[in-house]
Amino acid sequence: MDRIRNAVSRARETRETVTQDAAAAQRPQPAPAPASVQHPVTKGLAPTEPAATGSGDPLNLPTVQCNYENFARNRIIANEQDPVLNAYRVLRTRVLQKIDAEGWKTIAVVSPGSGAGKTVTAINLAIAISSKAGSRATLVDLDFYRPSVARYLGVTDAPSSLDFFEGKCSVRDVAVRPGLSDVVLLANERVTRRGAEHLTSPRADELINTAVHDFGSRVVIFDMSPLLGCDDTIAFLPKIDCALLVAASGDTRSDDLKEAKRILGKTNILGTVLNKAPAAFMPNQYY
Image (cartoon, rainbow, N blue to C red; front, side, top):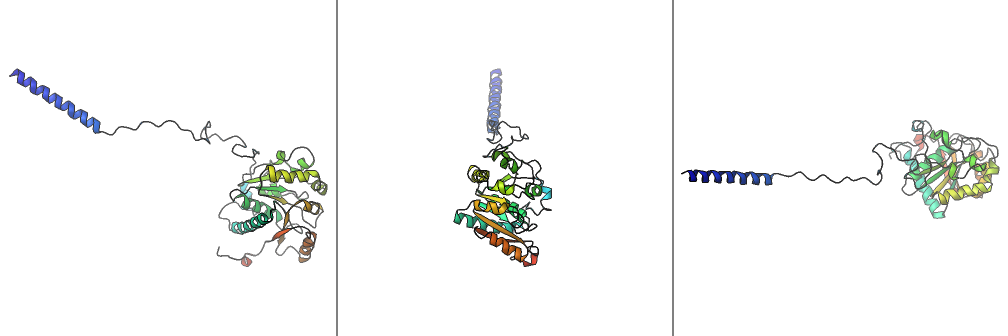
């Protein structure tokens, strides 16, 4: 009898063990922990550690900060919702089509007199062009009587292009990245009365050659002094491919506009921009 009881007990224990092992085998097992992976862009950097200045920029130029809070006051495009953006996109497309067809690279943005909005046009055109993939724009302030590009952008720590013209440094030393799509900026906040001498010197040719070839610019945009105010722009015109003439509705006098076009007689005129036009006169208001 004892042998029978012992056999039954051993059979019961064996059955319970097999049942427990089968249940354990059916339970889902946790997946193995993945190997540590670092993104190639941030490899070696802590998540909140900024990359070094110039890293990621194929030109390796220093960066400067714009004061974006001033953009609206200075009529500079700051976001995709800006209603004026579409007008500059249309201008961008027409400009690129024309310069590509003609093989042009350099544009002087000019106006008959002051207050027509040529600086705003030059900045916004550079931003619009550079926002198109593969279209780097270099923006150069050559208005030596009233330099305004840096002030409009709110840039306070950019070097002066005059340092290059005065032989103190190279073109690359005065070029910066202002954080506007793919824009290279050569700013200036100093005034000089020797602009015509600088703009007819070999250094002007060096600046153009560097901006086009070394910086890989699709277009180089020069903000120039007014045509009727001094001889700086007249002296520089033979060095550039074309000019964009800016006039202001209600401000630019017809006689001044005619005189400006006469001065530009031997220059390729890319087109004319009418600034400060009343909104009611603008076409395609629906869009």
